Amino acid sequence: MNFISSSYIPDTMIAELISSKNKEIDWLKEEIKFLRGENEKLLLIVGEKI
Image (cartoon, rainbow, N blue to C red; front, side, top):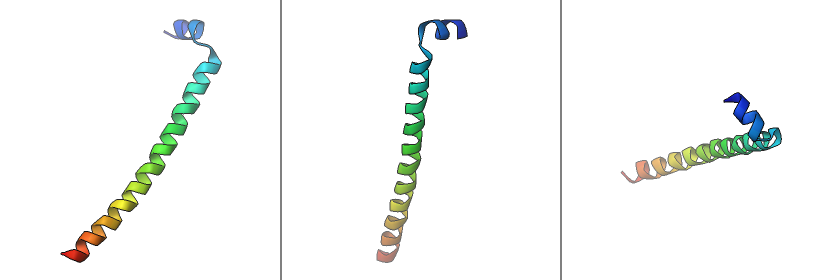
């Protein structure tokens, strides 16, 4: 498999793909953090109305 990937896929393309996926992972981590905060706000609002 290593032979096939190094023969047919340029190293720069692999590096760009990895970089892109790392950026996507970082964005998803930030999105999760934001959504957890929103969830906490909603739970506080619901708790006040009960």
